[in-house]
Amino acid sequence: MNTETKKTVLVAVGVIENATGDIFICRRGASQHQANKWEFPGGKVEAGETVEQALTRELAEEVGITVERCQPLMQLEHDYGDKQVKLAIHKVTAFSGEPRGLEGQPSRWVPVSKLAQYDFPEANGPIVEKLTAPGA
Ligand SMILES: Nc1nc2c([nH]c(=O)n2[C@H]2C[C@H](O)[C@@H](COP(=O)(O)OP(=O)(O)OP(=O)(O)O)O2)c(=O)[nH]1
Ligand SMILES: [Mg+2]
Image 1 (tube, rainbow, N blue to C red):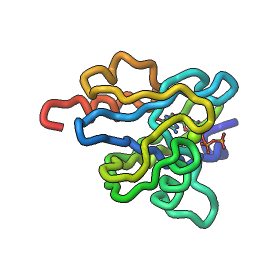
Image 2 (tube, rainbow, N blue to C red):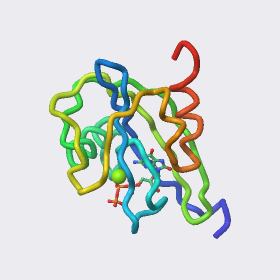
Image 3 (spheres, rainbow, N blue to C red):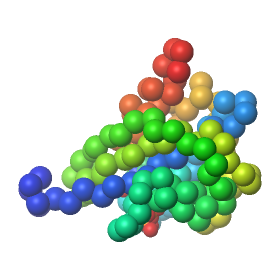
Image 4 (cartoon, rainbow, N blue to C red):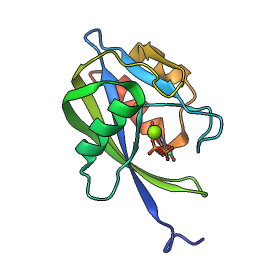
């Protein structure tokens, strides 16, 4: 398919931060797109939803938290060849509940200084860079 006709999938992504500054990440499933990569939880924005609504829904479904406060971090577009995505990334700075992998996915809290050791999808490079930049 050429780039003119390829549809871009809008994805709401949450960088969940705890009081210590650690970040919550999950591992994608073996049969998902970008299989087995680590990710910041989130998912596709559905028709009629705002990005924030989608983020709140996805984080409730996937990791069982209620988003109480979030702020835009950055937006990224990436073409994987088989799929083109636009990631609308928010930092989640207040939430209730303790995040865990509700869909059976491995998950963990990671210090920012260790994020770069994880195998994220290619699109995530700038997110990890921004989070680990001095003064971030
Ligand atoms: N959630 C998430 N998706 C990411 C990240 N980086 C990245 O390239 N993606 C891509 C992978 C997928 O193509 C897409 C997200 O789709 P998804 O599979 O999570 O969507 P979803 O939760 O609605 O799941 P599904 O119903 O389609 O199974 O965005 C990331 O950090 N987090
Ligand atoms: Mg998802």
